[in-house]
Length: 296
Image (cartoon, rainbow, N blue to C red; front, side, top):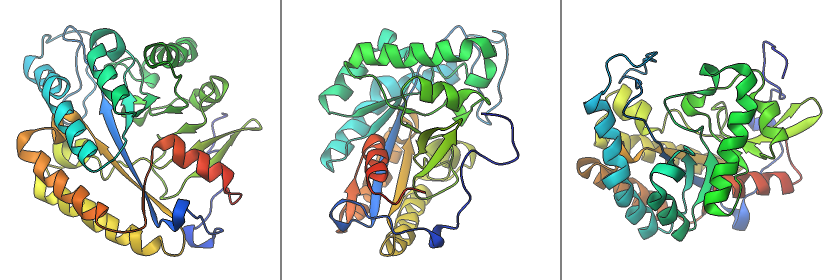
């Protein structure tokens, strides 16, 4: 993708597009993304305000690291049990290094038939922080390693920190990805075109994201619950005219905490009490959009 002042897609107002219909006339596609990540104890980690330290000064960062390790040891089990209770198959944004250091988590996700998408090797290194000539090899390694571990190569991608370079979309398309979730600028999927090749943007959420809401904006569990319900109410009403995607982004070390999980359950119970909610994975959303004949 060549540098440009606007993205490689058409601008369109959401109320001036053809109607997007979900399966069984659902109004909302509920998309729950669980970010399962690995941070190395001997590498500098991002701070609570998203600082990006360089080098290894200050390691081991015991508090930062062990908070995240709690998510992988304990919090993920709570999220798995909760999502299973409401028959929600999550899409896992997976650091591929998890396949090597915590294969038990990958196996547990496979037993739940969750979807996997690439999410860098580790969250301590983003795509815009590695040499440009290593980017495609890194993306290929991530997709290959997850494919080797799960017997199914991912077709989706979420960059760590939602970061890309000018070359990322080209590499994702060339490596067989059909959708990307870094672009948080819509409530519907849309088509990106790069040098005559296309990839679908499936709308992830930086707003309904426990990292942004709870860690950085200091929202309480009850406030996050209210945010989820309020967002659903608006999208559900709008979805009568044309289908919407409601993404909820979760991190096991945040919403997997005992004092937060009940708020998440109340929100999911509320959403699942409505007819017309399609519980979908990212690849299901992207595939249905591509088959719909109303791509934009």
